[in-house]
Amino acid sequence: MPDRPVSATVPTDTQDLEALAKAAVRLREQVSRRVVGQPQVVDLLLTALFAGGHGLFVGVPGLAKTLLVSTLAEALALDFSRIQFTPDLMPADITGSEILEEDAATGKRQFRFVAGPVFCNLLLADEINRTPPKTQAALLQAMQEGRVSAGGKTHRLPPPFHVFATQNPIEQEGTYPLPEAQLDRFMLQIVVDYPDADAEREIVSMGARPTLDIEPALTPAELVRHQALVKRLPVPPSVVDYVVKLLRASRPTDDSAPDAVRELVRWGAGPRAGQQMLTAAQAHAALAGRPGVTIEDVRALAGPVLLHRMVRSFTAQSRGVSSEEILEAIVSSLGA
Image (spheres, rainbow, N blue to C red):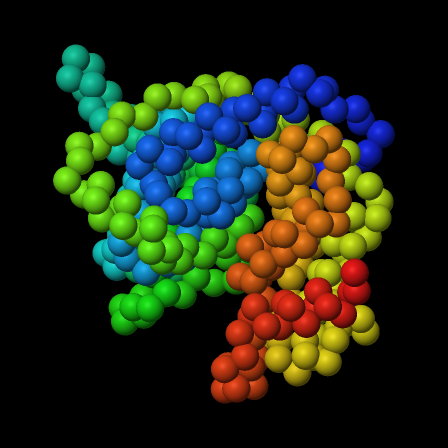
């Protein structure tokens, strides 16, 4: 599991916090050169990035999910890889494999590990639900531990390492739903919706224009320093208590769960969700230039952090009750 946030006794350097906020502004400016009309999506993307987490983008085709991630990689000068997930993709196609080589001079044979596309700073897993669970699981160790095991050896991935995956929610034929263990590795699930009319008009008119160049706004080393700063941001005990209450209220077997959860939820969020909630809240506060985390930061991220970790019951599905409605009941049960 990721490290827990440092306690509120650790001071935060004001100048470093200002530098982080300015870096985020530069990143938004570069991303907006190609991606129009998705400010909330960009904010959540940056939250996952500065929190050191992974993101799952859910939206219909044609909403610039892939363009958004590839543009971010350019703006960060990160080593970027894209994998188009298909039913015939194998685990070794992601992690790499060992090949047998023969020395032409001596005739000696030995195995050599050939790294797969996962050995990068930012991996785009395009349409991740189109490949079987065995191949999906190849990302589990990489996402959780930042390393890959192959041929009895462990190979570390270069920091920073992020997986941003895309998923199409409407075309389910020939897909493999991500298992709960895989979903739990994604810090945020980011829903990408249609842009408003003005933004869509601008997007359509951009079709005839040449692709705009992206200037690096942040180096990988600077990003790593900002991520370390985020984890040092003070988290008051009251915020930790609120997160724990939120988690426990999402579990149908807990005494604090509201009636809606007892009836409509089969499985709630676990402790890892709480850890990632606090880290995401730290990033949310830092991006706003605030030196501490509040309960409002947690509320703002409750949906992206928890919705993909709550499994609805058959009753909820048959009645057409959404996860968003259930989460609203949970948040309401905790009061203001």
